[in-house]
Image 1 (cartoon, rainbow, N blue to C red):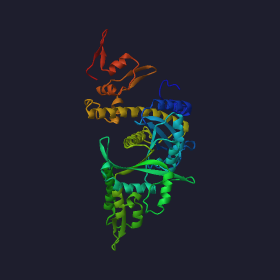
Image 2 (image 1 turned 90 degrees about the vertical axis):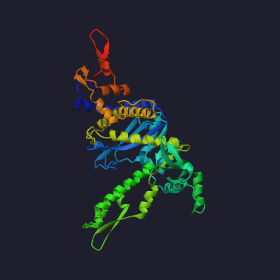
Image 3 (image 1 turned 180 degrees about the vertical axis):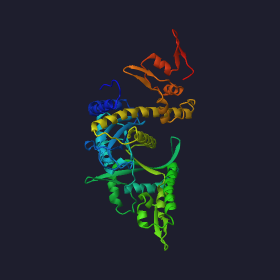
Length: 454
């Protein structure tokens, strides 16, 4: 693979196609990434990449997580505990999250990766969790809280969180938590969660018998006060807007008007029409009571032996990966992919994957620098407080100009020199380039002299 001369659209298209066909080279690169990774966590996430092309069947209609009316391919990406990308694979756009897990675990083991697997709620099914337990994998999974036994634990947790032992701290933030042991049984190929039930419960003896013979996992029901406020705010924003818009109006077809409301709104609001044909919005008491009880709560499932700190640390990583995905899945103009060649699409994704590695690397340096300043280990400087986008805009002022081997750097600003001192990103082919980044000027026949200007 050679790059010479101008990086024209044709050259980049050929480069992308060649990269996309180089499966063996990609696997070697992923294996090297895995070997170099440090830390106990490996995060798996799945996202939809919108596409305007059919891509020989790779791009299909399916559930689009962003609600875009486009065909899509799926990208499964694995990162380490700091969000640094390790590997990815391109999948057909109609594939479900739960069907990815088995193959991904096998691929990770082939690559030599054996850390704790962290996943979002899309991967949470009793069958998937049972499979991870059967393999002996360590995992942390955000639950979708749809299974009835999980809902029962959430209800039980409301009372259990009143104990003093329920109060916990993590990364300077306060939580309340209730920890439980839950089982999974496989009956005739169907996997189900089981929990202990009171002795006066119907069929308690049979259910407890299943629990004793089941595969066990840890369940953490967590209450986050900040999340609770955000959850209630989200409900009230939606409800209040609808009430203001529809209360005391006289639509031609009230039922049709109501049916067009999002399901999330209809869950909390009903309506009636008075004798004057005016539409009135009324709140559903049970829905608001349930929302109040569940506000701020989330459920994490984990392999046996997982403690509170390990679970929360792995939960933090999931947020970093989702933010990285927002950048990864769009073309530079913010739109979906337009290529019709699956090899070229895979190659472009690989190039963006390498770019994402650099982006997350810079993001982690900025995050650690900010933490050091807040702890008092370092003083505030011009880099402190900058977002990654601000950093990239500053670095974008440094360019290499030229053609056919005759290249030079543009003027180097003080911002770029400060950022380079912190990030250590650049490589230079000549001493002059390095001196310019260090703010040095040469005198004829003498040593470099420091420059006070940019």
